[in-house]
Structures are given as structure tokens and as C-alpha cells.
Image (spheres, helix red, strand yellow):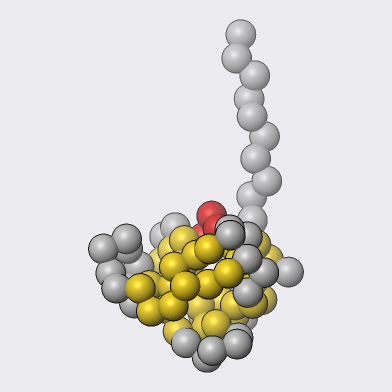
Amino acid sequence: KEEAVKKDVVTFVSGDMLAVGAAVLKLREEAGEDYPVLEVLKKYDMLQLIALDGEWLQVKVVESGNYGFVRAQYVYKI
């Protein structure tokens, strides 16, 4: 008998403040691994959520002011 694994569902809303949870995270030009990297972010860098695109988030980097896309699984709401 398999046990169901309970996962916390995080809902992101435009304007949310986020932080990078990974040691490094690539900010990309568009939503996808094949797009150019605009900036390499570090753990705890602050981001502001602009929009959702599937498993990708469009964000503004607070420190640099750059806009781009990151994978949702590597950030957390603060």
C-alpha cells in the first residue's frame, strides 16, 4: 500500500517578494533553458515577481534592476 506524499503548495502572486534558494541560479532572457543567461544570481538574492509562465517566473532582480526568468522551484516567498 503506497502512502500519499503531502506537498506544500505555494501560490505565487504578482508583486510577491522572493529570494533565491539555490546556491546559484541563472536569470534567463525568456522562459526556457535554451535562452541566454542575463545574470547569475546567488543564494538569498532578492527578486520581485512580475508574472508566471508555467514553471518559470518572470522577475525583477532587486539589486541590479534586471528583468528575466527563473525556475520557480529554486526560489521561495519571503
